[in-house]
Image 1 (cartoon, rainbow over the protein chains, first blue to last red):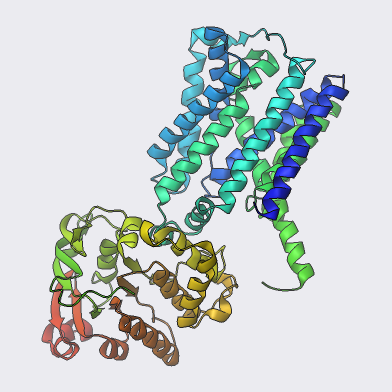
Image 2: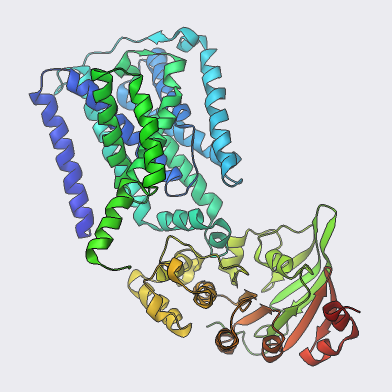
Length: 319
Length: 250
């Protein structure tokens, strides 16, 4: 294992320990409510950047995957009383399948067509779920949380820790992809798809792979949301806000490095939480929009890009 | 490098009755030609005559309407470009298409990562050496760790050839690698191509610069309006009445 990898896994372990310690020390439930949302957005942003950042295929369908995750959990819980771990695992499998189908159907086309198809996907799935009585239809569905298992004192604490695990999983996968031949292939096809093909890169296969992984992680991130809210309805589970946020967080953080979406998600997630508490939940959408515009104009490479530029200046070289 | 063994009569690349249409426009009309192993093959023709279309059909960027492409004894007509690259067909682009977010060395690494056949996988430690030896050969060693954005035109053309070489090709197609270069730069690129041919790589060179074509080609083909109008030794082709008409007009 390289020194970088060692540092990463030590960091990940510390993060999980800190999350676990938080659940043991802090009695108040609010911090977990707030942090859960931020962690959820980290997973979504990291997952988004696997296809949107590394491969450059802009996915507007984060909310479709998220919503499918939510409703997979709802269905499994209602039909089989399935435990949380099963809900997440099945949601991930379903997300992978959805990513595969979407990828195979649309990724042959280059650029904007994929983006349009992802919007259509959201609408189709949301409409289907809205008309599906078993999971509550348009009115939504109330869910009764089961008893929480030790060492956690409340279900929200447990969900918080589960989401922290998903963060580590998502980041580890994104990091692996970035440093592996898959990442180099995605980077090449992002730069120039035809040149990549003619250099031996199996572009379609790599794009579909990225779409599968990204979709699985998004659905996994959505699955615990049903239990988090104890309620699910189509218009909030498939809310466009998830798509916009995941995209904005990735781009603001910077997609050239796996850490970018994390930075972006923390920055925007914390800002949103603060604004929701202090001003109103509508203002945070406005702030998101303004920040996205500012970054696209002033720092198209995101925060990671700014840091890299600063580092380059300090070493004083053009290299 | 791969050298065809002893007496191999078969063509390395056999194009048979290839036709490519864009809507009602026939870009290639029933083109048939054999390229022999180790050959230096020149391809000329006026603008719009179908040269680049032919290259796109050989490398797999375009699907063809009719006809077959057989490479190294195998029908590759319906294979996607990346598989053809792995089988040994490499190309450069008329307008250079570098991976612009990468350094020169990283551009070549992509080829090592993806184009090498399972059998001759290169271990990580040797990759840098492999890349550097190709860059040295192409005169780009000093640019290895520079972004491709900082390269001059001639360096970009050489980088394209270097990247193609890193795929370990049997057949290299150079699509107007010399267009827009100064005469000394033309000689540099030409010397490079001749050197690569000397290593046993079959090369198809598309070019407008006649002095380069005449010096390079062992055999020359002229396309006009999607049809072969002449094929033979450079002297024969240039003496051909129809070639002169196509180029100079009547």
